[in-house]
Image 1 (tube, one colour):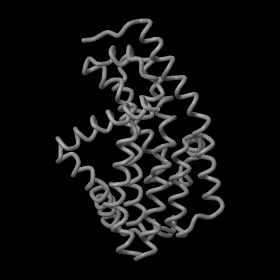
Image 2 (cartoon, rainbow, N blue to C red):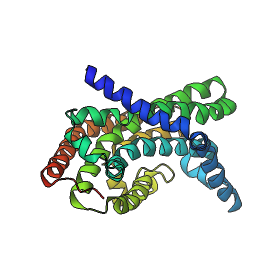
Image 3 (cartoon, helix red, strand yellow):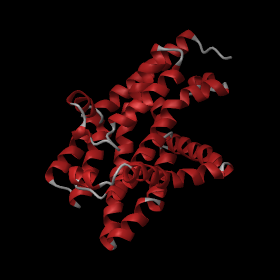
Image 4 (cartoon, one colour):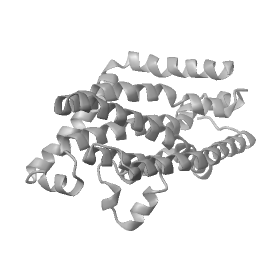
Length: 270
């Protein structure tokens, strides 16, 4: 346990040291949900209004898109730290030392997303909380806190998926960053953040049910439409939890196999 706490502490110092050094990037992160929401709503109004959207989803477009922007940024921030870390270590020349470290692999990959999860809470408090309170008062505070909690769950549920993608990707190709630049946009679409999955073609919808975070996002969207979590929403959260528990050992094993293969072949540095 002490070893895990030391790794978590080192990861927090690494991430927040960079955030303190790059204050403009931190400020941009806090403003992104507003920027994305204004951009999308601006296009919607420019094309003739958002009444059709409200009729189809039952949700207020402003609340829907500010929540969607917050959830997308949160999930991708947590997953990006995992997906890009091997390439980052390779480019920095630290990958051989990481692989030779006696630190347990599971501990390292548990620690990497935690600093970003803290930012998820901060990002929610500066984006959806003020908007929900402005529109719904005290009840809006409760709703926004529920969405923050569900977003944390969605971010956590995507970690095993990220580990699985990493293990498969880094074992099969040398141009990892090129493939990741294709995979990330596909993930954003399949999460159903901006385009609800029940509106997707059945093939895409079937794929989304294999992504735990997508089920939690749908539960959030149902909350936005009805202002309550019904039995179907709880079933979606249960499905996401079950898939997370299934993917976790598979994702960890995938990473261990990749690192074992890399140690056996040797790390090439440029």
